[in-house]
Length: 344
Image 1 (tube, one colour):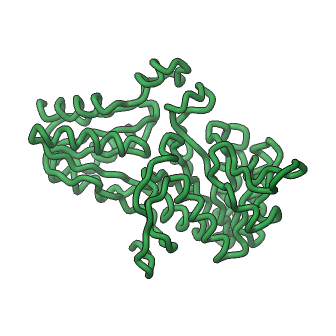
Image 2 (tube, one colour):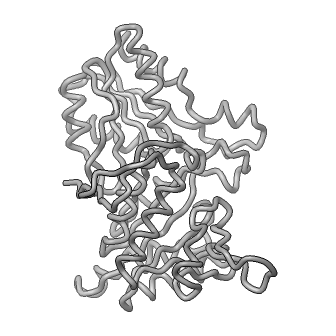
Image 3 (cartoon, one colour):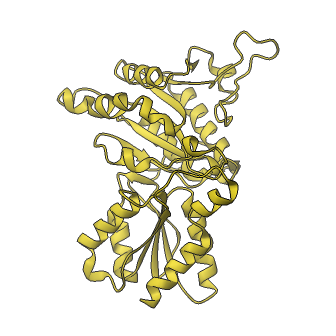
């Protein structure tokens, strides 16, 4: 169950501020928590205030002045060095939070992730712990081009030994990140860059959200919509529009894709009989494809219409703003998919 704060106080925080809050509170609680990555502190050797730059998205800003450069560590521009150092530190008593900045660059350090960190527990008979978190940004819409805009969560979700977290709002971001830092296995914490300025009420005190438990931002009985990461916001908007037409949608946010809350999805489909899955990744080998196969295999008797997937096309993310907007699954596409499964 979720560990809730005792004070009951909360405030309006952005997604960015909630993540910063989680990092700060865990670093205060546990001296073994460290942060490492490119420009996570910054400013060394420069004139002026010695303050944390906080990376390109400003997420770690202000942490270095409080915790020092021994715990908020700027690294060379080398993803292999960042993840290799984090994996080694995790095996030697620390709890590193490594930032890849853009998750698109996992190709440079993929061996350290899937062939090393993910397998240490298995290779050493369950005696090894690797309590490391890898933070990285994902997703299109930031006008960052094809090399900085991918949704690569299906790649890491495929790998046993890794936990993959994809919060869709500031409240979940804080609770899930604290849970990730306290976990004894490698966790991939994927932040959609478009959501950094989105706000909601977030408790001021620390709290955790367990992995593998989905959220239900909308409840309904006609169609189940499973949405991943930033697509949750669009699915909620689509559900609210459809409600005006008398169509009741059950919106499910898995929050973690490994582990995945299969039970909640299957239970919802048992009620609605119809499923639409919204995933910004390409359709081939995506979470949409994976969830489709789970429901087709384990919940086929509940289905009253074919499953619909709303995904990005099988192409690199365009740099043209007009094409990029067309590339990302839209509210209109979700609405039309729901209408289609109802018509079927």
